[in-house]
Image 1 (cartoon, one colour):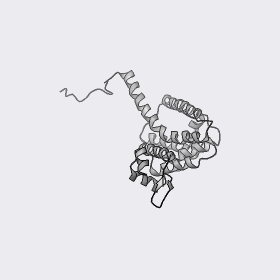
Image 2 (cartoon, rainbow, N blue to C red):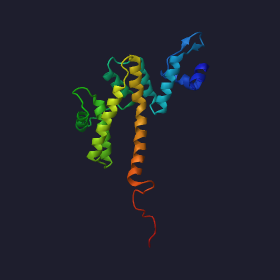
Image 3 (cartoon, helix red, strand yellow):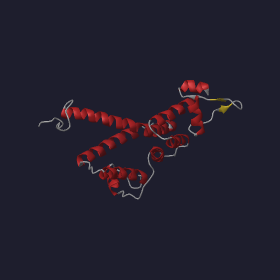
Image 4 (cartoon, rainbow, N blue to C red):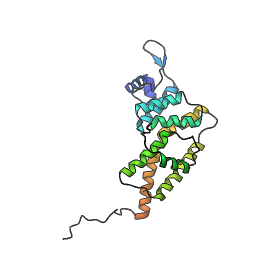
Length: 212
C-alpha cells in the first residue's frame, strides 16, 4: 500500500478510506497483513480522486465506479447510469410539460428520455421562475442549439472499437466534463462582456458620489 500511495500521490489513510467505502478494489492478498496493488488500482485511484475533486459525493463516486465495473449493455443505458451517479434522481411530481417540449426541440424520440432527466430540467426552470427571472427566448434558443451541438460532438467521440474505453469515456466524461462546461461558460461571458461594454465599464451609473 505504501508503494501504491507513492505512485498515485494519494495518502495511505485516504486509500484505506476508499477501500472501506468500496471505491477501490481490494489488492491481491499475499499474507494476512500484506496485499499487492497494480496499475488498475493506480488508474482507479486517479478516477476517484478526480471525481471527489470535481465535487462528486462519496455515494456518487461509488455509483460511478460500480457502473465502470458492471456497465449496462447499451450506450443509452450507460448514459442513464452515468447520469444517475452524479445527478439528482427525483421527479417530485413537478410538471414535465415544458421540459418535454425542450426535449422535442433537441430531437427526442418517444420513450428515450428518463423522467429524472426531464424533472432535472423542469426543476431548473422552476427555480429560475421562483427567483422572478425569465430567460429571453433568444437565450433559450441558443442554449438548445449549443447543447445539441455539445451532445452530438460528445456522443460522436465515444470509442467504437473498445467497449471498456467506451464505458470509461461515457462515465468519466459525464462525471467530470460538466465543471469544464461551466468554467468555459463563465470565461466566455467575461470575453463577451468585454467585447460589448469594453474593459472596466460599470454595469450601472455610479450613484455613490455625493452631488449635494
